[in-house]
Image 1 (cartoon, helix red, strand yellow):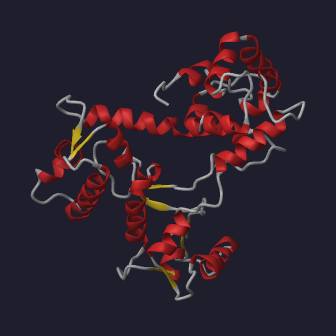
Image 2 (cartoon, one colour):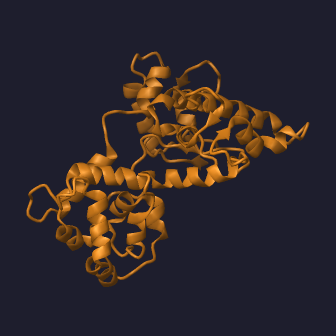
Image 3 (cartoon, one colour):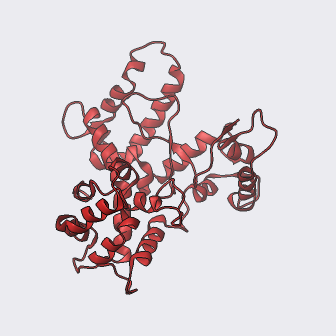
Length: 322
């Protein structure tokens, strides 16, 4: 039995970690939570750490005792100044909910820019500060194009065709060359409004196994759960069946069309960063004035960074382009 729990919603295939395509690309989570860890402040603050620092950044920090962590964060004026400077956008000495939300979004996007920077270097082959479709195609699929009969060549050519379609949508000036912003939109379409149509289209293509242009209940469930070899069905799968019938399939025709799929993978009714920002401010705001001071942040060091403060200063100084 293969079981993949649903983490919010799944959408399209994408981000390429190497120069060669893989058999099965991971999908981008368009409305994913700020951390895959359960948000349970009774047990620990791991969710808050990843939300505040970014999931990838939090994983790289050395483990310190609470005393070492508090000393590192609390005694260093450099760390505190950077904290206020980067998060306190209007430079009034206080951090508001809005400023905290913006910082959280910044922290969560840091890995995207790292990924783009890494791939930019490997795909801008002629060093002209642009990645053309030919450069990307040759760097990613060149070995397939040179082989008249590569293993699973048909699948790779399908992937290449999809990449070209997405590249053209990201290429807003239609010159078949991507500048840094266009390349970012190509690699991470979930971050750009003008790329949302391709996100929906690729999601439907991935899940619509019978090719009728819709996602029916069996396809919806089959994308999350394979019941082969197991006569019982987990409760979460039963709940997803109910979700499909009651909420996903709005016109009750037994399947999701393009607009219903868009509503599923691009919900507009919940902002994870806003919710986490309100949580952090509420939990840290000792005088309940709706604002956070340096002292309040340091006093709640365990909520923000806990024992993972080793490279906190470095985390705050990276990526000036944000």
